[in-house]
Each structure stands twice: as C-alpha cells, then as structure tokens.
Length: 508
Ligand SMILES: C[S@@+](CC[C@H](N)C(=O)[O-])C[C@H]1O[C@@H](n2cnc3c(N)ncnc32)[C@H](O)[C@@H]1O
Image (cartoon, rainbow, N blue to C red; front, side, top):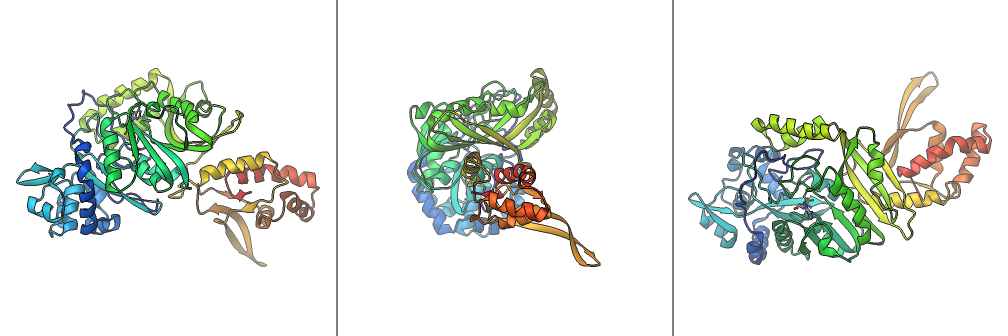
C-alpha cells in the first residue's frame, strides 16, 4: 500500500503486534451492534452519496488534518468537530461515518444518505455504521465496520475496521492476477476487496455472521463481487481449491476466548498451527498462501523449529518473522491497545500466570507464506526480518520460492542478475591519494529492504551480475584478479552468493 489508512478504526489502534483488545475481565454484554445485512439494499445509494460528496482518502485527510487518528483514538472530538462545521456534504459524511456524531436529518438527506443507514441520536441522526477509506497498492476502497468509541467496551462479536494487522497482511499479499482467492477470517472484508482487484473470484469466510454481513456490505459499497460464507475455518469451502489464500486470523495467544475477532478459541498457538496444517489441501499446485500468525517460544524448545514443523511436506514454506516479544511486552502491548486503565493490573497478572504455566519464554509474530508443490518434498525457511520493509512486498513471496528453486538447480551454472532496486552506499575517507572507501553497504530499496556490507571484490562481482554471464565465468575472472585458485575463490564466494540470492539481491 502506498500509505497507511487515512482514518483509523478507533478500536484498531496501530501496534507492531496487530490490532486487538485484551481479555475481557467480565462476560461481554449482549450485542447492541447494527445488523449489516439490513443496510445492504441501500449500499449503492451510499456509494453514490460518497461520490457526490467528494469522499476519498485524500479529501478526508485534508479535511480532518494529520492529527485525526490520534484524536479519534482518544475520543477527542472537539478538534475534528471544528474542522467539519461548514455543513458541506463531505463534512456531513465525515461527521456521520468517521467521527460517528449526530447531524441534522435534513443535512444527512441533503448529503444523499438514505434513512435506512441512519439511527436517531439526540436531536438528530447518526450513522448506523462507520466507513473507513483505505488505500493499498494504488487501490482505494471504503470499508464498513461497527461503530465504536475508545471509551466503551468492545463487544464479543464486534467487527473492527482496518488496523495494523490488516495492513501488514495486505502489504505481504502478492498482487499478480490469479483465478480463485480465499480470504479466511474476512471481518470487514478489507482483504477481499483488495484481492477482488486481481482475482477472477473471491470467496470470503468468517465464523461471525456479522462479519460476513460486513464483508457483503463493504463489497456492495465498492461495487465488488465477493462470495461471503459463514462458518468455522475451512468448513464453508470444503473440497474447494484456490490459487491464493490470505488470512489475518484471530492469532492472539492468551487466556481469553470472548472475542471472535481476536481469540481463536484454541489452546496456545493451536489455531495458527491448524490453519497451516490444513491450508495446503485447498491450494492448487503452485498456489500461494499468506497468513499472519503468532507462535510460542517455550522453554526447552526451539521456537523457530516449532513454527517450521507446522508446514506439511506438500508445500514449501517461508516464515518472515517480524517480531519476538517477551511475555511481559506482549501482554502490555495488548492491554495498552485497548486502554485498560484500572483493569490493567489484574489482567496483566492473570495473563502472565497463564504464560508461566505453559513455560512461555517469548511470543513471535510474523507472516507465514507457502507454495504448493507438485511432490511431497517441501522445505521451510525462516528469516528474521526486524528491519522496516517496503509498504508493499507481496511480490517477494513467489520470488523467494522461485529463487530457492533456482538455487537447488546450482549456483555456478546460473546467470544471476543484480535486482534493479539494489544500491551500493560507500563511506570514504580522504587520503593523500584521494578518497578511499572504508565501507560499502548494499541496500535494497524495495521488498524486505535487506542491507549488508560487501568488500571490493564482492562489489565488483555483483556489478558483473547482469544476467548474461554465468556465475562460474565471473568467478574465474575474480579468482585471477584476487590471486586465488578457482576452488579457493568458490569456497569464499559461494556461501555469500547463496545468501545474496536468498535475500533477493541476486535473481535468476
Ligand atoms: C483479526 S480479524 C481479521 C479481519 C480482516 N480480515 C482484516 O484483515 O482486518 C479475524 C477474523 O477472523 C474471524 N474468525 C475468528 N475465528 C474464526 C474461525 N474459527 N473461523 C473463521 N473465522 C474466524 C473473526 O470473526 C474475525 O473477523
């Protein structure tokens, strides 16, 4: 995506770990939330009203200003009310669908909002749902989700807007044209809307009836075709195959099971493990899956091995680990995410005791990717990727598996090419003979934005990798200039080249 969503879902506050609320201390109250199905028929009228009113991510950014997100997260409405007090259609739409405040019925009518989408509020009317503009990979959509105030409790079947986890998955999704795409755990429908742009068919599933209602509503609002089905995990798509599967599942690990959008309802990291184990049965040969996951690092066990062991042999797997949090930091992040205040202490203690009982030393967060093989000889690779990555890096998922295949065919016989976005940064000191380079760093501008030091010989070798000459030929030249035998040069260079291929500096 080119930039983060302009307007946040108040409950979906950004955090490196995703967007969830913590374990409820008491049972949630019965849902007072709207039924999105009831709004479906008039969605085209609302879409028309948004178009006429000049609704877009950029227009709303300009109207509400750069501090809008922070204000909404804290229920600080006064600054935003002042910026929307002119009565223009866009200001009315922003008050209704972004701020979630009342307007005059007359104003709502003038802005083209049908009365089916309005509920009485104070002396005026308010919108039944919230709308969030999202820009991702040059595609702009509007996502419908439940209303929520930062000061009120999240309901058990609440459907959140687009949060940090949603954008993390969208950024990691390959956007090449495909046939059938499955979005498992569709929620508001954001992944389905984005996938619809490059898929011939999109099937969205969710166990929460209200979520599939919202997926349909979001699809109708954007005039997109999404086949939304309600049911547990793969039940609604039994026996069906897909070219692409994306999933932002309820991956948070803890004692809570009260929120469908967050709690998988399984023990520990079992939900993510089940997903990875069952997913390959729904992929066509060569089909790709991308999902978010948390997994445990348990005392006496290797956490990397744990997640890699989840992948069945019918697929190759690539784990992009983004973060490894201590139990304390993990719990704190989620409890802060929903601003628990006085409930923080008891919830923190209960959660930490729950982890201690299971000997949890850390919790990892990452993007799990897989590609279905023809045979059963699948391999799994794990990369620790703590660095900032490009806003969209989904094209790296198939590219990674392609490079691994090329490596398996042999390094020396391949004519590797330096990827176009790689730059060499040099630091040089002035000497009596002029500038002398003391360090050279390779940096990718796109994808996972790997960087790493390289010596003068390595830099020369890479410059020669233009896709026309095999590495074996280049190595012979290098050996001569370095005064090494070809075997000595190969011993030194091959492990480095293999790593450069794995990280995508060199491509076949
Ligand atoms: C974190 S939300 C993701 C929403 C949306 N896809 C996004 O990226 O923002 C997880 C979704 O998974 C759904 N879910 C929870 N348990 C499920 C299950 N067992 N089977 C299918 N969906 C489930 C929840 O209702 C929720 O909508």
